[in-house]
Image (cartoon, rainbow, N blue to C red):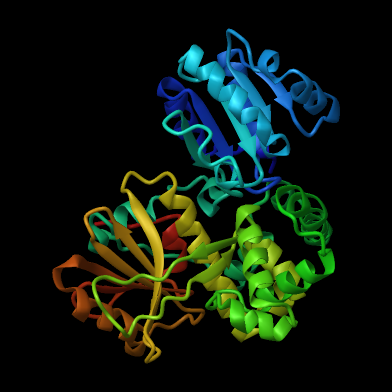
Length: 417
């Protein structure tokens, strides 16, 4: 499989934005396919291509930025975070010539959130996230679970032939185009080098972090706690770093798309909800590589597999929220009493679907305890509670409660009623 053969969900979002927005920012992890997608859009629109990975191009832009951004056609700038000062000249250009689709910018960091950048292009920019391949992009399946569960969740009756080992292999494969197309041994080399390059290049270029060994220690620690709560004080105690330093490092790892921070969900006044966020690794292959496991050993590492599986599912759903027709957000829920729901999906009207992720191939009633708690609290706003497990069939566990195969996330149209 090669990246050029895979249709990306984000492509239609970019084309829609080109039609009515002056500046489009395509953000995502390095090696996720941003350059390939941007080149395709540039060819269709006759755009000029520039890459700030090229030091000569970057130098020319820094020397005469006003002239650099002046053109009659679309200008595409790849890896724009390497010269964020170019954004002010872009603002001046699009204010003078307010044409939709004037600029398409890509960044391997959250460009509009960078220091001194956030207020540069208000009202002129749309940011679109490009993640590593989703399972649906790889398989050529629907990737529309979020839309289904927040509109008509109980109409789904998916079945699956996938086994626990199949899910393990998908986790270890991850979604980076260059990793998906490789053998397992060569994929391990790619992922190991990816993390090293991220620390040595991306992190240092978007932040003041210079202590690579400290950052690598923190990343390794996170890999062993994937799917857990993100508590800087606990991480500081384990690593010997200050809480302030850990918080800064975590923000940087989120900014360069190594991890995704999942906020805690709460509604109204409650003293029982835990406010600490959870986190997931943006690419499950990176997390598995950092844990020291391959697809054979991970099958036997039940505790670690559970956290990796939850992180894997959370990121598949996070991808879908960026292109789904339903405007949805992703949260987690946990009380101080230990009641928890792995993933909470909420639409703009406040409708809620709770999702639990289980590594077991058998679903039992106790798997729904957190979902029942959330249902009792929410009343009619609770649309459904779904346990995603490694078993083969959809099972009912009461009104609005279903167990479904994990593969329903990317192939939810199987056997619909």
